Image 1 (tube, rainbow, N blue to C red):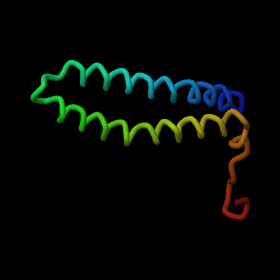
Image 2 (cartoon, rainbow, N blue to C red; image 1 turned 60 degrees about the vertical axis):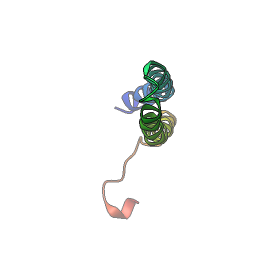
Image 3 (cartoon, one colour; image 1 turned 90 degrees about the vertical axis):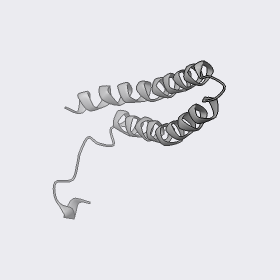
Image 4 (cartoon, one colour; image 1 turned 30 degrees about the horizontal axis):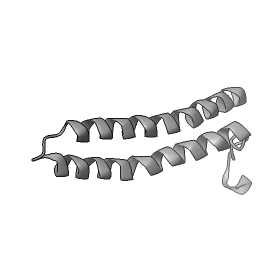
Length: 82
C-alpha cells in the first residue's frame, strides 16, 4: 500500500503542472476566440477560474510531494498518536 501511495504521489506531482498548463492554454484559446463585445467578460471569467484552480493545483503538487517522500506511510489510528 505504501508503494501505491508513492506511485500516486508521482502521478499527482506530474498532473498538477500539466493541469495548470492546460488551463492556461484553454484560457488563451477561449479569450482569443471571443468577439470584441464579449472579450472582457471572457477574460474576467478565466481570471477567476485561474485564481481559484492554480492554488488547488499547487496544493496537489505539495500533497504529491509529501506522499512520494513517505510522510503518509504511517497514519495515526487514535488521538494519542497525533
